[in-house]
Length: 81
Image (cartoon, rainbow, N blue to C red):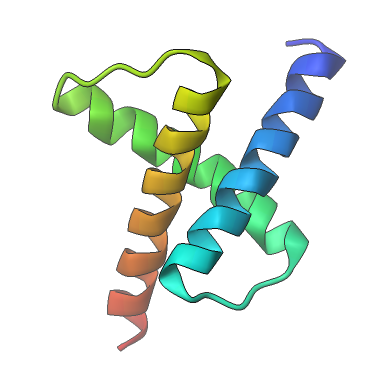
């Protein structure tokens, strides 16, 4: 994995985490949003892979990461209760 791959992953993670935070009403900082977006991308890829849905391109990657990040936020909120 090259430096550009890392930079693109962080940028996608930041956007996905930020969008998921808006959708779920989460008030977190940028670093947490980046981490959340990266974890969301992994979770989203796994979940969508299980149900057989494939996304292509950067927009598809962002959609998958946002959906995964929303799922992560939802689960964390359940655990906190």
